[in-house]
Structures are given as structure tokens and as C-alpha cells.
Figure: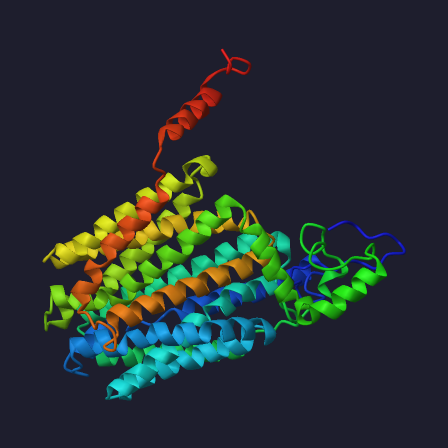
Length: 483
């Protein structure tokens, strides 16, 4: 932001600022926002400790609940996609309007409802309500990821985001390992494991109550109008400035009405930015790949039960596989930050190659009769997805301001959920084709292969030219490139 003059009112940043008084001096820093961030990361870690989550499917299919595979595949699991689509936008809006904490409370209460229904529900309808509450927890994850930005200044955003992400990944890994150890080594029943999960979730609810509720948020709760100090690159083209003619201002006010709402102006700005080819490419990848990824994640535990329907619970290794895939995903996400290539040139080839490998892994999961090959294929499939996520995040974020970036990710998630819901309704739901899980997984490789063909350019000769140009720039001394 440009510095204000003596007679000009101090501009207000579009970023949600930390609470007044949080950084008055070095001694107070340690006792204010840093402690709040530490507490939030601890909360993020503890909220992931649900050791029974990896074993929900075998619990439903086992003697404790005794649902059939068809009921779980075609009646219970599809509800998750439908309800997630229904609550995604309301939760997204309420998160900002209510300033994060109430939505985090809703998430904690929803988790408790999930496990209460798991433990005491006995009908398909109860399990469908369980999926509805689980969809609330999924939609509310945005509250945690955006909450931390209200506590710190923009200069700390990148570091704080990495801290909160690390806390979540460490929590998921710890939860999966703990669950697997309790099942395999401790020979704990799935029912007892769910009671342990409920205890951890109750503790997380207590932690949520002590979170600080910010006074500001990104869209609805600002101390002053957003355009008061916006930089030219963010809102100058979305709101009439002082240089506009009065008649033009008045006519825009009369004609636009609700279009003066900041979110509507930002949607128009997003539409303009989507003309950028790289932004459009990565947004399309996000939508299509996320839909396919979550369809696999939602149904893979049922597939494992088909491949190896053992009655010995100590030989169910869902928790170990989830831990391994989380660890590999964290490693590939970290490694992606060190990939330095000309993305405008190589992006389509990288996306197409990774998508083709995912298609092969999904095909292996469908064809193999070895549960261990199935486990390995899923771990690699998830690692490949997590490799491209931070790259896509950076490519999208580098083209937009932080407000528009948050909106674009929300739009991408919404369209991905719409696509996933349509596929679920046609393929999985008993009111549609009602296919068994093997047939559903078998439909995924052609889908991934089609996306790979879509992204890989037909004429790849220019890639070789670009490669040799990059090599010449690196290897030849300055001034000899043209020789």
C-alpha cells in the first residue's frame, strides 16, 4: 500500500488485520499473537486425533453394525456428496460473516454427532444423518485454514500457513498410527476405538471454546470500507474512485444496486482474470482432478473390503495405509516447492503425465487381487495428487490478490463438488445405476486417461525447443546464446 500523506486518511489494507494491540512491543508479541497461533496449531493437531476414522467402513460392514456392502456403497456413502454440496456455500459465507469461531464450534459439535450416530445408530437413515454431519465438518475446514490469517500481519502469512498445515498433517498421521497400533497391537475392537475417538473430539470441543474470536474477517467484517485504501491492482477497477465524474458515479450506483457488494465485484474481477491461460489451466485441473480424487478416497475403503474381506480385525491395515499416504503426501508437497521449471511451457505435460500415472494406479487397484498392491497403489495415487496441489495453489495465487485467491479456490471447490455429485448420482446412487464399488473404480481409469490426453499437448516438438533453449541459457556464457 502507498503511504498516506498528512492530510489523507490512513488507508486500510484489504487483508484482515490482527487485533489492535497485538504487536505493540517485543515483550507483548510473545504473549499475544504468537501464543494465539501456537494454541490454534495445537487445536488443529488435536482436532485431527480421530483414531477410529480409518476404520469406519469395516466397522459398518462388520458384526457391530452388519450393514451390507450394497447399503454402504449405494445408500449411505452417496449422501456425503449431496450434503457437502448443499452446505458448502452457506458454510463458506457464514465462516466469514460469523468470524470463524462459531463455525469451528459447529465443526466440533458435528464431529461429536458423527461418532454418536456411529456408536448408537442402527439404521440406514441414522448412517445417512451421520454422513450429513460429516459433510458439515468437511465444509467447515475452511474456518481453520483462514482463521490463522486474522491473527497475524500479511508478512507472516506464508510461515503461519505452513505451521497450521504441518499441525494438521501431523495430527492426521498421529491419529492414523494410533488407530492402527490400537487395532493391530492392542487388539482393540472398532467399537472401543470409536469411544476413544469420541473422547478426543470432546476434548477438541473444549479447546474450541477458548479460541479467540477475531473482530475482522476477509469480506463482511472490515473496520472501514474496503476501497478506502485498496491498492490500484485490487479494487480500483471494481469501485468508482474519487476521479470519476459524479454523474457516472450516480448512474453506476442506481444501476448496479447489489452489484456494489464487494463479493459481486470480486466475481467480476475473477471473470476477467480467467482470461489468463495458465490460471484457466490450473483451475480446470483443480476441478476435474479433485472430483476424481475424492471419489476414490470416499470409496477406497469399501474396495479394500472387497479385495480382502477378512473377519480378523487385527489384519485390517486402513490406519497404516492412511498414515503412509499422509506421510508421502507431506513429502511430495514439500518437494514440489523445490521444482523450478518454466511452468508456462511444461505445465500441460506435467499435469498430463501425473494424471496418466494416476489412471494406471487406479486401474491396478481395480485389477489386482492382492490387498498389499492395492494399498501401495492408493498411497502412490494420493502422493501424486498432493504433489500437484501446492504447485496449483502457487500458480493460481501468483495471478491474484489474496481476496480473489480465496474466492477462486472456493469456486473451484464448488464446481468440483458439483461434478462429483453428478457422478455419484449417476454411478453410485441406488436411484441411478447403483454400481458395485469395483465397477465404479473401473470407470475411473478411462476418466483419468481422458483428462491426461486433454492436458498433454498434441504437438510436443516445441517442448524440446524450449528444453534446449533453457539448457543454452544455463550452460553458455553470457553473450554466446545467439552463436
